[in-house]
Image 1 (tube, one colour):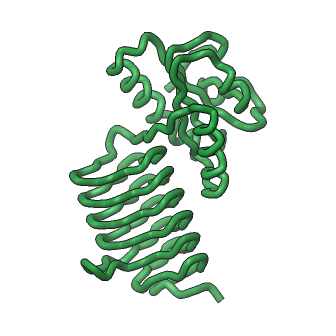
Image 2 (image 1 turned 90 degrees about the vertical axis):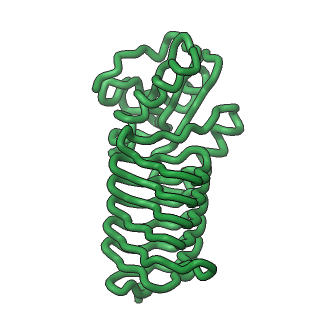
Image 3 (image 1 turned 60 degrees about the vertical axis):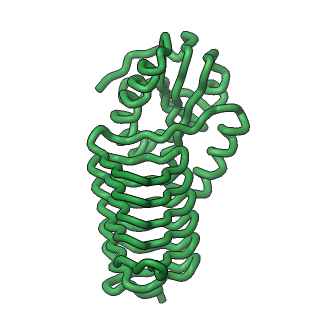
Length: 230
């Protein structure tokens, strides 16, 4: 998909995806049409999308304008939306606060084939890539990343700035703390009502790990069953 838009023209509503790496290039093909459809439904007269990077090396990326942070905030518009593709959750938090302080509004984006069922609470700024799902009665915090083929099952509680790499299987009654990272192909065993399986804040679950017990905060676990890294 190629979006031929000029960042020099004022727009009524604009959207900036912060980041210019591989994940940004995966997200923009569904984020841009999602944003444009939303603006059309709201009756916006025009909408434009941008990649935003601290130090852009080109004027466009995959056919979408690439601008610096200062350029993005200097564009004349009536409403400014943003999301952040940075994998580093601490950087994600810093950029989110910067954007909110400058009166930009976080926008959750999802692929057309994402499924979200009933009675879920999802915080602002989430990204749900292709073939991801959230079932029922989950609570998900701010700026969550759900990479391709990952899911969040019933009664899970996910903190702020949590990252799921591709194909994470997060089964029911799991609580995950802020800034945790769950690696590609990891499986998290289902907890029980009143006794969830808990992955602490800042924990890292390695690629392919099978988590059967609680993980302490700021601990890296690996293997099947997952154990703390020595």
